[in-house]
Amino acid sequence: MKIILCAGILLVAVLICGCTTSSQQSTVAADIQPPNLIGNWTGTMTGYVYGIGYTNFSGYTMTLRITEQNDRIFSGEITFSEQSGWESVACAGAIGRDGRTITLVETGGADGGGYSSGYLVAPDEMELIYSVVSDPFSIAMDVLKKS
Image 1 (tube, rainbow, N blue to C red):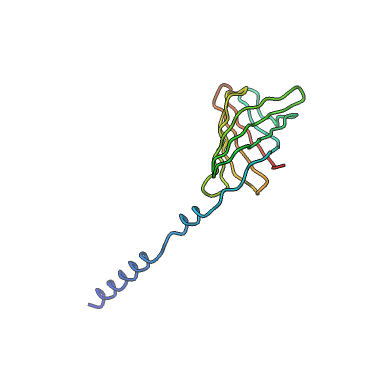
Image 2: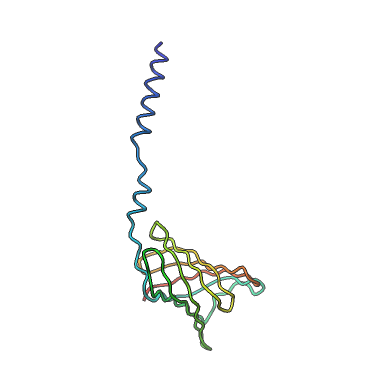
């Protein structure tokens, strides 16, 4: 009888604990205001291109110019410049619910366009990982600072 009584009390205690706890993760994520990304973000690139190898894209500068933002969605253009000229491509992206994660897609360009994923390291710095699946495939790390 004591065993049944103890098991019953234990079961009630477990049920009470389970019913009174609440998940704070969903309420915290919903309360985060997305950062304002509008402006110019400039930086460097390092990467790998299949058939060529590792590269630091020496002489290139990348500028992400975000011109519009609506809540967590933003758009603009990316300009790649070097001594012999420059190339600009349209882009759009989204900020994750955590306020730090970034996903970006870009059109056209020499490699046909690609996707980036990354995060805000600080309010004025982001790191993006860019990948292209065309032939030759490539991947690059972009470290950009807001100017």
